[in-house]
Amino acid sequence: MYGQIDWDSLEWELVVEGIKRKVVHLNGATVVLNKLDPGNEPFPHFHPHEQVSYIVEGRLDFTIDGQTHHLNPGDLLAVPPESEHYAVAVGDTICLNLDFFTPKREDYVQSPAKTKS
View 1: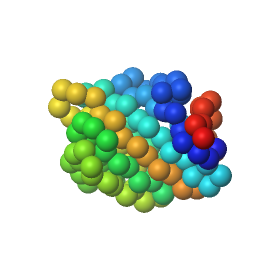
View 2: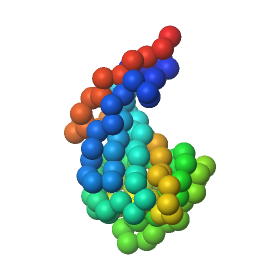
View 3: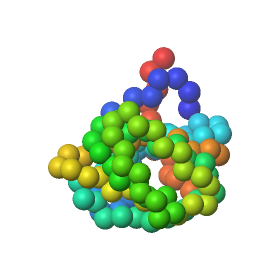
């Protein structure tokens, strides 16, 4: 999918309690908008993909292989492949973050998105 993406046309998918996502696939990458409720349950996981996380709003404690990074809006974090990681929204507001994965996350369901030309 190429062109302008209308995030509002995508449905939120429940990942685990307190974490929802919207997914857009490109040919060689996946972009995910995540919404984390304050104090969400940690969801430790790992995958073979490179991941870059950008904090849009809210605050996030992002732990990679046992090291916690305190992130604020505008912060960017690189997550190496095969590293165990998870994120927890801190404070009393939701956290929105964008994740960029390469290669494409074939294990994520394709969200039906509309593009604007």
